[in-house]
Amino acid sequence: MAWLRNLSKFATMKRASSSSQRPKNTDPFCLLPSFTFFSNFSTNTIEEKPCVKPVEYNNYSGLQPTRPHEKPRVVVLGSGWAGCRLMKGLDPRVYDIVCVSPRNHMVFTPLLASTCVGTLEFRSVAEPIGRIQPAISREPGSYFFLANCTQIDAHNHMVHCETVTEGVETIAPWKFTISYDKLVIALGSQPSTFGIQGVKEHAIFLREVHHAQEIRRKLLLNLMLSDVPGISEEEKQRLLHCVVVGGGPTGVEFSGELSDFITKDVRQRYVHVKDYIRVTLIEANEILSSFDDRLRRYATKQLTKSGVRLVRGIVKDVKPQKISLNDGSEVPYGLLVWSTGVGPLPMIQSLDLPKAPGGRIGVDEWLRVPSVQDVFSIGDCSGFVESTGRQTLPALAQVAERQGKYLAALLNKIGKAGAGHANSAKEIEFGDPFVYRHLGSMATIGRYKALVDLRQTKEAKGLALAGFLSFFIWRSAYITRVISWRNRFYVLVNWITTVVFGRDISRL
Image (cartoon, rainbow, N blue to C red):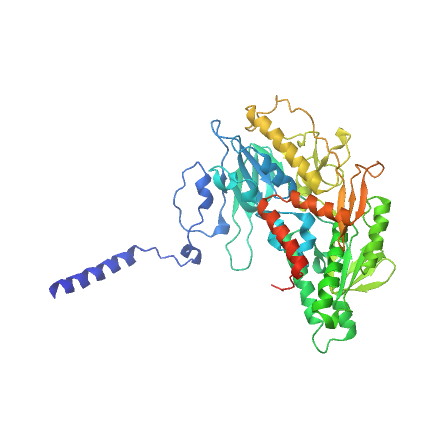
């Protein structure tokens, strides 16, 4: 057994040697693996350094400037209608494409209201960025970063970013930089609250998938709470009062979906409270102001027939359980949905770039930002500068989509002409400027009825329809506009399932 004693002695000596060589560092951050993900993108040599806390760094890692023999890099800020249509049209053989956004998908907003009441599933209106532009998932120089842009250094062709984190027990946000050859700002907009106190705290917006999820959970929770024994009549009426502020297409479509949900599902599955639930739509002026007068009157009549109460007034204050109007009246609510238009983001307002009327980033006829090189802006965050003599375009999905398509073709042309790298497009002829032609407006109002207004302007002549035929046109148009065949299939199956089996009322 001498060999066994020698083996035991050798193991003891080995453990003692290892413990003497182990660094005596009690910092808990040293127990975590080093965060060197972005160092792989740098061309500089990364040396091993002693463990430090992630928040104590001075130099940012990131994507370094491209070299002359490499493909130029287009950095897209945002994943909305404009940014995604741009990325879809960019040629990955010409450019490396980098997208920076706090969400990894595009939301098909025209159908978002349908997800709030279970007509559609949430995944039916969300399209992953990697499916819109496959090069981001496949090409070695193209990336998607789940992050927010915090600063733009146009002089040095660089953007500063910070990763998005959720929850308390998570890593600290990681800051990094990205050098660009061409930068496209498509950050979108934010809901307008007009400085009314309490809106952000108590109302729910309808612009993202998580907004629709919150509305659905709140609606179903109120339905179930109102059925609990001991709830007073007054409290039951408040819980089941759904108030929508804003009479634009989003507010009207949500009110129509909600009235359908009440008529076809709530009255069958929540018999005890079916007579308490009601919908109120508050608008300062006329609903659907961009539509033809005849169509507006038809919408008003149909919404009223569906049980939606229309109130003309201006909200002055929002409290946890009621809102105050300009006439002094108070409206109690259990669910408050806010849809009163959009305005520029604080990030857009803070940028040291030319501005258009309304606080948007100013652009010229080719969607370039004047006074800086290689910077473009599209979508809700951009507008024409006054020197162009053009009016700022409305914040519509079709405007953003057209701008993205136009700019993708323009950048492809620039890249194929050999001017894709930074500061190399000064002598390039850009060609025809961007021109927007309005294709018309559509909105569903519930009960298998919709409005279709195909006039280019309110004063122009054109086709204007209302009723079931318009509803068929509305659905046909939007199912063809859904980006992928996968989501088209989801939407079609959801529509059929809703007709046959009713809406899903599970509170997940």
